Image 1 (cartoon, protein in one colour):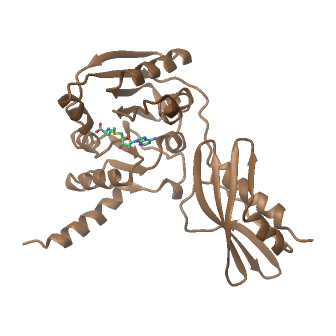
Image 2 (cartoon, rainbow, N blue to C red):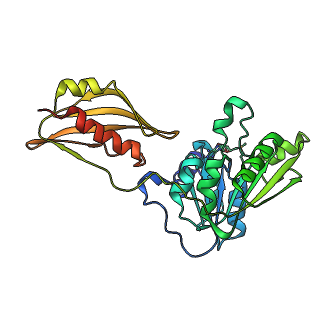
Length: 309
Ligand SMILES: C[S@@+](CC[C@H](N)C(=O)[O-])C[C@H]1O[C@@H](n2cnc3c(N)ncnc32)[C@H](O)[C@@H]1O
């Protein structure tokens, strides 16, 4: 008989191979030849793994905000030994344009995205005009983005955004999908669904990440200024950088920082250490961050601020 605990541990570990850390990857990804299908917000991964199972020669990708959902889906992938699936944990708004090249995807799917129904929550809705402008160009020329929602107001809001952008799309009322957890939930509650099939359209995709990261070399540092910057906040060109404390080590300092690019927030550390007859300020390694303009800017700001005479 198989030991239950051993089985659970080994399955969790095996599931990790399905989850990729975009922060450590070269982006955008160079995709293999073939059909590439991506699901945003796949929840428990039922639909994504079902599709990957039934089309083993196609390549499947998933982006999901919830870590627990990523693990659930990855465990399903272990059950079906799916070699054609990769999962990314994170916000599709940020990750999608960073991960994929223009004209690289055949199909992008989103089933029952969160509608954020209150007016005050409008900024949190995924299918905004800036999102479409960043993402529709990732589709191949004959590629499609398919959205299914149970929320009529969200459906109308999305349709209006598409009309304002001049994008071609088809819409219709459908029965709730039986192949996703939320589809079944809405079916049981007697709710309807609406689908939108949206064509590829080239806009200028805005990407924030590039691989290079500045190091700052300083002849001297001013410790009082280092103390001072550890509570300072800077806002420039839509970026916000806030320093949140200083930790002292042996001939080195760790400065805690929060950087915001547009709405994308990251927390990390900058290390300032003495190396022979100079000081070096750089991103502390080992922390998962994307090398965005705000992160780069923060290192530049630290270098200028703490430089001694
Ligand atoms: C209502 S559930 C639908 C799950 C699944 N598609 C289904 O039909 O059962 C919405 C899912 O989208 C995910 N999600 C919400 N916003 C997201 C974002 N910006 N990027 C990636 N995933 C997101 C949530 O974590 C959640 O799992």
